[in-house]
Image (cartoon, rainbow, N blue to C red; front, side, top):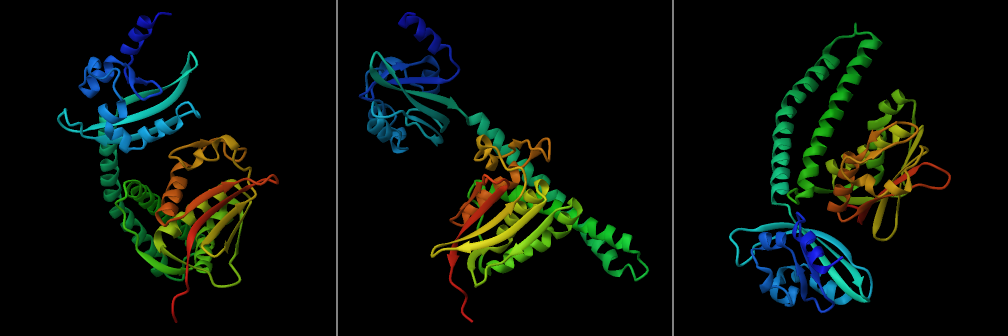
Length: 351
């Protein structure tokens, strides 16, 4: 296969292709990248790419990483960013993947560049539409909740047990739907770093008890058993109480959906508090254990043929990281799943 034939293939690809030699000089610059960058290949080939052609990529650590790792170990990195080329009007939003390879015993690096401006515009439109829909749905939802609570409270002693339980189920269902809407809205805010945390010192034991109380009825309806094992001593965290409570509720909901027994507990070291939700369910396969925190990941299990567990767990991870912590998942050999939310430990409030 001739070099000219390969160049023809590169020129017909719908993404920008740049190949760099070991010194970081461009040896391939395809037609799509000419169009995307506004540069002619004869002005690029043979020149140090990260220093003279695209210093903005060097700023994003690509140049340093290329110089440090080319010919030493495999390179495979993907990132997205926007920049304003000095020779083009407006800005450019791109997804860049840099991979290394060898040819004839010599190391090379290949950059694959994809223009994602339209994709980002659509994402922003979806986000705005979601925000508007959620905002418009919150008001009628509050009306339904208020009406149910009013009848529940003032319906009189003549109500049968079945009627009272029906109202309790209705109130619980509306509150769950309300929480789902808030989580959807706050997921977007957390992803775009526009959410301000309202921190306060909270007793970890109270957090666990509240989460257990929240899920008690749902667990009973599903035939699951939920237990709370609060820490023996005082443990405190400085958190956005509402966000962490909703994140915990998501983890508990997820557990009782897939298990017969769920246990809430907490532990700590000098720096961190760990909130643990353990269950005796079927566990999560190794290949999806990390991806389960991504949006809309489908996980099959013997309990549920196909369950969408992605959005709620995405919210949990975003909330944990916004507090300087994280969430992890392990599946013991004996079975089940253990979700751990790690949060920075706080001192007890002054009495």
